[in-house]
Image 1 (cartoon, rainbow, N blue to C red):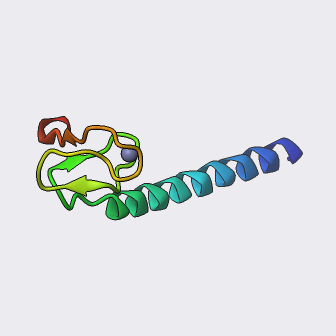
Image 2 (cartoon, rainbow, N blue to C red):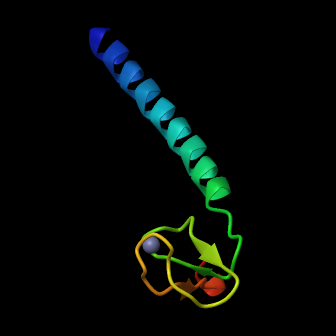
Length: 69
Ligand SMILES: [Zn+2]
């Protein structure tokens, strides 16, 4: 009986973690919603409509790959 309780608790924990993961993923997706076509690979929040460099690290912005979704 004790074993079953432990397994149930563990399953509940896993489910809770999965639900949390999903919520986090959705949130991240919304936050990183593309504003421009180009973005910094190190700073996805830095985007631009045309090629340029990241305002935070100076890296070249890369074109968003729509096919990779
Ligand atoms: Zn950057």
